[in-house]
Image 1 (cartoon, rainbow, N blue to C red):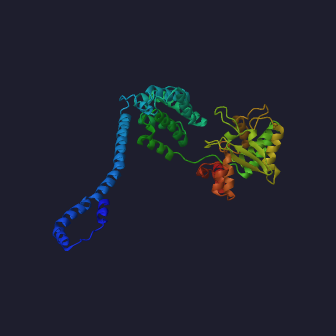
Image 2: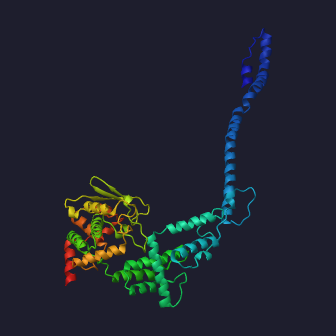
Length: 456
């Protein structure tokens, strides 16, 4: 383009004479032809397409680089995947530490699970990890060190509540008893579905409830799943056996609720059966707190067999309207978040839980420890409380087989329903996780009818 512009910008000279004009005219055709060639040469050269080609080449350069990078990454990923599928393949020295991960040995995992089962149930059983592939529970060898193995034992030990552990121990004691008495052999895992179904029949013949049988069968399934054995409790035969037990059982809770009238009669009976003034104040406070607080007996009274955690006096606080108990250990409360139980004043001081608890605290003292103590300043035993409650029930001419410590909770639930409390409120007051509280509701007419049938 630069040449073209210079050619066109040359000044044109005029011819001086006609001869020159003729010569010029004669030569004009050839000259014009040469000038056309010379002047058009720069124009004919495809300068603009060359620029486009360079632009395309420049644009394709990063694209080629990106494709090469992607190809390299795909090759690396392919190598990693192949190494993961074949962990025994030797790796170059330059590979990362992540490629050197190998799975844990079966012996380590087997020791952790067997140790947990032995600690929980008191006997040793061969687990299924010796049969399965290495690393069935996962975990690289450079992670599954001694410290993490010990921590895994703690995690497994914390997976079950203390009450569940005790129940599962009783279940496995019965399993050993069943194998010894019925099958005349020892327990060997995995249990067959037929032997498990026979165990269900064995428990049914011992007059255990359907709920208890289901819990004990769950203990068998827990050990099998933990040991990586097939779970015999999920087979069709065992499931149908359990279903039959549930159908044949009455399914009715025989425990009767402590109604408002019965509660007043129990307070009168406590005064007559108590050995001293301390025991009377204790029983009166315990009865009213159990009833108005929707408490379970294990939340207030200590059971030496279950080693349960009871309400401490430090969890009790005084308010303007009464008392607040911040309970942390109760059923289904895995997170141990405190739940506030409010005990409010009532117009009748004889039936007021705040007055009864205040009188008891005056004679109990301010020493730390469980809320309810005996005269020896020890946690009041559950067995002793149930014995005193039985005496009060018999004093009221009631059947002690129908009225238990849980009857306070059943009576509180029934009374709340009778006073038209919303179901959501009843569930919160009783710290129920589901609608299981509905089975505790006993309409007054039903209670009277059941009492009449018992008398007849």
